[in-house]
Image 1: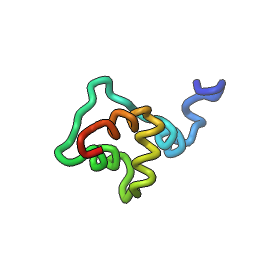
Image 2 (image 1 turned 60 degrees about the horizontal axis):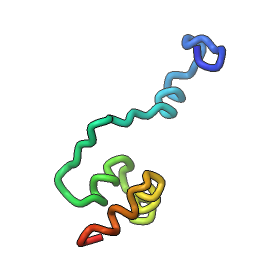
Image 3 (image 1 turned 135 degrees about the horizontal axis):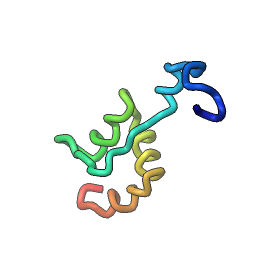
Length: 68
């Protein structure tokens, strides 16, 4: 049940688009921090990546790095 609705009545595409998974052990891919954040959205702009970093409270940490 989700919100008192049987799972059999819920649109699977909608459900999959609203559920996310965040692993407890982060895995960094080769490349920049920008590249690693952008993996979550194909064609992400720099502004979108910066916003995602800010929403994750990682922006201050990133800006403190040598290359920002």
